[in-house]
Each structure stands twice: as structure tokens, then as C-alpha cells.
Image 1 (cartoon, rainbow, N blue to C red):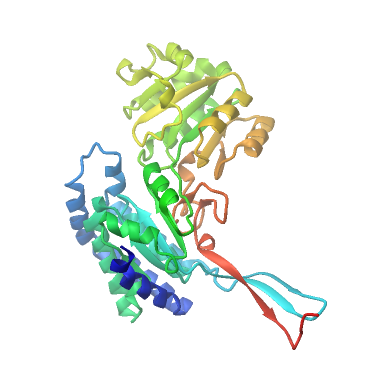
Image 2: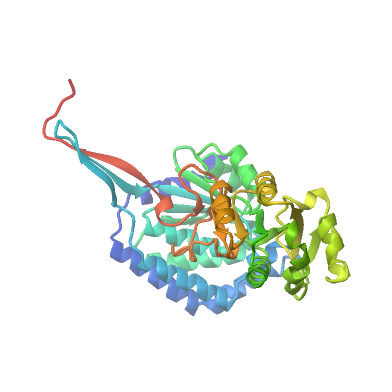
Length: 415
């Protein structure tokens, strides 16, 4: 199986050994951002071919869809990446030992980065931009749902590389067939790290079958706790934004946890969600409070499976708790360790929440929609890592580097 793809992998290895100047790297990224805007009609035309094959009701449809505004945002992110300082060569530590050895620790590229993703054509731009800025080569395996979009994007990337006479293997798009995924999972000695980005099913498949190191960008099962001491107006806006801004993304809110002492405010807290046809799955206490105060066609009794579900749709679970401790326990039991939030004006509750919630991003009085590389000032992101080794949270430039030790001596030998 691997032999069918050896050519791609061997060329990627050779490209990873080439050093490009930061000036040229930034010029390519700016060129690519410009081309994305100029060729918007072409990108939309190819994207439409993919969209026409998918049911608009599919949660992946929104992720697959490109619009002029989204392309402008992608181009803006690439320009922002070009403006950022490169982490390559950054000295992380430096010391001189008693024997005179000068030891320093410096950032270097990971090497060849493989990324497996589903119906998310923006990932093709994002991964290339971040990898290219950090001296990495990327091997991309997009899903068949986005085949036309990804081919169009890689052609634009290759045109930008060719303009500066740069090896096109800095960005390789593998065929959409399943065999390409299997080959990438077994690319020992060719690919340094593999990053899955997509559904929990995809992530689990990669984790269980990959023979090379994996950085998980996990699914987002996101909670927001409305505390006893929460501000209603503030909370209403935060919950509305976190749930409805864009439901198909991993930082969208899935479960609203409400302190029992604030049940009287629950109807007002969720009222704006009805305007977006948000379906609620409420536990017994919240259901009884919401009857007559929320559209009956959108109000359902929660079943156990509604908690711990990433909806990726206009759906929201509601859970009533006695106190902060119960809220923390609920989050610990159901969280995917992506993004969690508390709405409160109590300093003690806030401090406890920040210290005890185990997630990549923990919020106070703010929408979880901000869990995003660009919003964190990283330019863009490879994904949101929910694991703890090497990278956690939005993966930007630093997270696409490793380090090596440089030791300078003057004839020292070890006794």
C-alpha cells in the first residue's frame, strides 16, 4: 500500500531539507493571499461542485461552504501569518557549563507534517500557511466531500510556489481515496507527525491506526456554567453568541449549565435562542420552568445521551445544578477538554473554575467562540489540540516547531 505513495513521501522528505529565507516565505504567503482574493470566483465555482453533492442539512455543509467573506478572512489570516515573527532559530535557553561547553536550545521545524481532515477546505490554506512559515512540509489528505475545493486551492498554492521557483512538494495533496489515508497512517520514516482534524470518528481512527506520532485536535463538547452570581444581560449575550454564531464549529456551545438559584432567569437567558430556531433538550427542572416561556416545538425533555454530545447544529442541552461543585463534576464527566466557560461576578467562583476545569481553553464571562488561532493572535491554526503533550489549544507557529540542542566546545572531552 505504502509503495503507491512513496513518490509523494520521498519528495516531501527532500523538500523538508531545503532552507528558505524568511523574506521569500513571507512573499509567497502574501502572493497566496492576493491570489485567493483574485480567484474568488474560481474557488466558489469549484466549491459549489462539492456543495451540490452534499445535503444542506448535513452539519458538515457549513464547514464545507466557502463564501466571499470567508475567503477574505482566509486571505487576511495568511497576510497576518506573513507579518508574524518566525519562531525558527529562536533561542529557548542558553548556558555555559563549568567545563566551558556552550549549550543552547533552539526552535526547529517538525519536518514533514501530515494532516487528515474532512469537509473543511479552509484547512488546506491554513495548514500550508502555518507549515510554510515554520519551515515544515505538509502532506494533506482531505476528504472526498471537498475534493474539488481542495484541488482548486492546492493549484493556487502551487502557482504561488512556482512563481518563486520553490519546490511544489512543500505542499502535497494526496488523492481523496481511503487508500491514501492508510498509506499516510503507515508512513514511518517519511512523516514526522500526523494531525487529524474532523469528527470524533476520524480522530479515533487515526489515533488507533497511526504508526507515527499523532497530535489530536479533538471534538468540542462545550459547556457554559451560569453561576449563582452571574450577570443576566452579560450571560444572555454570551450564551447566544456561543451557540448561534456558527453551529458547525468545534467551539460552539453544546450544554448550558444553570445554578438552581437562577432558575427564575432561565427563560430570559435562553429567549434569544428561539429567534434562531434553537432546539433545547432540558432536564426535568429546566423543562418545567421553560414550559410556556419557550416555543413548545423547540422544547424537549433531555435524555442521557444529550449530555456529552457535540451537536454541530442549532441544538442545546440544559442542565440544572445545585452549586459550583456539581457544575464542575458535570463538566469533568462530559467535557472533551476543548473549551469551557463560567459566567459569574464572584471572584472566588471564578478562581475555582479556572483552577479546576481541565480544558485547553477556560473562559470567564466570554463566549467560547473565541477559541480560534486568529482570535488568539496566532494568525491561524492547524487545529485545537485537546491533548497535553507538546501542544494544547489553538496550534499556531510555535506548536509546529520542535527544538534541538546546540553544543559548542573547544576540545572538551568527557572524563
